[in-house]
Image (cartoon, rainbow, N blue to C red; front, side):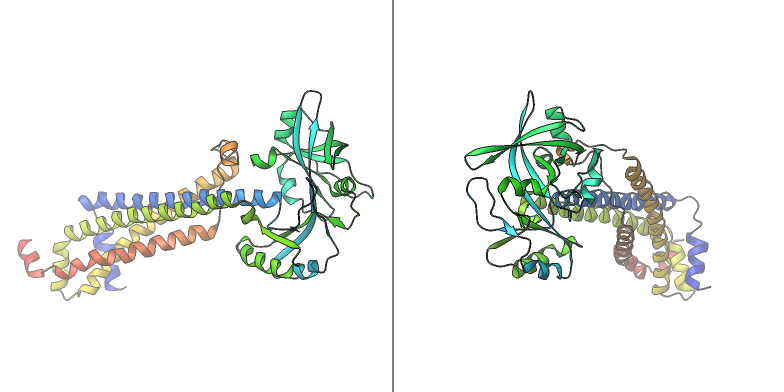
Length: 406
């Protein structure tokens, strides 16, 4: 057994009484609470970012391609599904899926209510994963028939405003040139995303209904929605998709379509950095205080070790090992507490939120194992580096003076 390890175990690990014993416990729990706050803060803020980003992208897509020309009134200029750009875009590294869509403004009229809506039409290639996860009642519309389906899904917000339930018929009027055209739809599903701007206006159905209303053939749509496999590639793929498209198309990323929302999400990163910095300082101050008190209480022992031939490096190693043990215990307790609280919130949703203000009914949690590892490793590294400064005090201790005083 190494000399430093023996001294650490015999003299420092089994301290009884003294001010440093209580301070070591305080330092251990300070590190634990600091790590707990760091992990919980990052998990919650990252959870907010991921959940809101997934909802906004799920309602549309990562990249939207439409005609850059504007039609008369509310009409959109259609683009063909047979354009050569589609094949090139589909082969780009990172592009996961391409689907077609069209939107048309209209008005739902019931016996006692009138509500403006946007009817979004999709086809059989529509990725329904997001809406399936948001469905509260019923099912998604059926697009497998050869004829246009009259089935639609509406939001819980619209259902409550218009007093609609499953299997109800809803009469919708669409503005067409100088007149209007009526369509009757059947409600087969009710979804809820907690995104007020979308839930207040959108109902989803068959793309062929809009094609018929606009007099388009089955190869014409309002635009393409491009889904990618990694949100971090959004800016690069947005540029590559725009480069692949002809001059008559305009390419917009989901970030460009919702600048205020994504600016708010980016601002959360500053909050994360601030919380990590403050909690790291708390951990460092607690551990440095414990180390200094241990050095002051063991000044005579340091003098004896120097008299017996131990050099400053060896003695410094003894106290750094004890300090690392304090940090290690704090990290262990902090990670255990954070994991427990994260799992409880993730599974049981104990803390609720106002969905109108926060876009979700409960506090979201991002349970990423790398987050636990990186925060723990970073805290340990910062604490050990900070401890090197007070540990230099050991070199200033004169064994002759400490032994004489003792």
